[in-house]
Amino acid sequence: MHSTDKPRIFPLYFQAVSLVNIIFVIISIVCFCLKTHPNYRIPDIDISTTMGNLSSIPIGSGFGVGNGPSKIQLNTIYVGKMATRAHPAFFYVELFCNIWFSAEFLVRMVFCPNLGRFLKTPVNIIDFIATVSFYIDWALDRALSGSNRDSVEFFSIIRILRLFKLTQHSTGLKILIQTFKASAQELFLLVFFVLLGIVIFAALVYYAERVERNENNQFSSIPVGLWWAVITICTIGFGDLVPQTSLGRVVGSVCALMGVLTIALPVPVIVSNFAMFYSHAQARSKLPKKRRRVLQANEAKVGRGTAAVMINAFTPRGPVGGGGSNPSDGKGI
Image 1 (cartoon, rainbow, N blue to C red):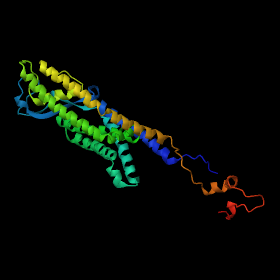
Image 2 (image 1 turned 120 degrees about the vertical axis):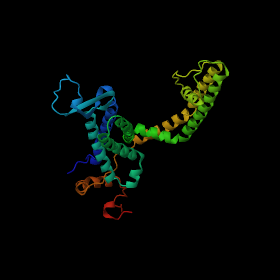
Image 3 (image 1 turned 90 degrees about the horizontal axis):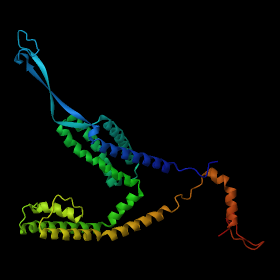
Image 4 (image 1 turned 135 degrees about the vertical axis):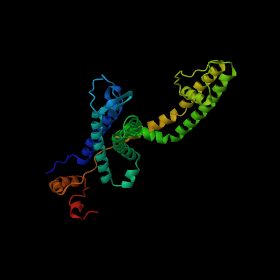
């Protein structure tokens, strides 16, 4: 007799794989960040070998001079701007993680019901590019050296996009993505008005600083003013560019106020969409997870008596001695 509370194997398997996948993603991102720390990098010393003539060495240098000229090997160590590379331990950790990612991606691709839809999913595309970039970086790292290796390491930033894989395992991240999709029109209008304000205030502050006499004018062109306008509208204010004239300060004040109003306008719409998707997710999580299970042949045979009792209990009876229908004899309606 089989237990009626049998665990469903595949959901438990997927939960375990998802947990392991999250752990590997976190380990991969941590290694990607730590390997750039100076304490975890080793110098990449460039040693070049040249052949010199022993007869050209001055007398008294400690080398014996024979009858004829001879050759001596000279090693030159370049100690200029020394290049560094990550500790080899990070490579082995990342290699182990990428072997897991490769195997997991291949298994999902083989057993997916719709291969075309699988290959078009953005998360799967990012996963494939991030995994392939590791092997390409590995091959180029073995072929290049010095400063060329630093330029190749720049492309490894693609691997940090693997964080988007966490959206498959987090309901909150899925809600956030759906919120941004539903608020795409409002976000587009926000970006449009912000860009419009950046261009306008960059031009205004440029000419405002030129109207009055200003020996410390930091706004040499409108493109320089664009950087200042971006920082001011976003209410950050680094302080590297500061208006010096009265008219320039007025322009800066209006720019900051317009930035606060512009960014705050679409916030209620985005919050409303987030609350809607969150309430739907909460309602969906409260639905029953277990579907009605189909009984196996041996289970149906064992439970036949109990099922008959339950059917008779819910079957309407006719008068005593009358022709009450019995569902078990096939005469009922």
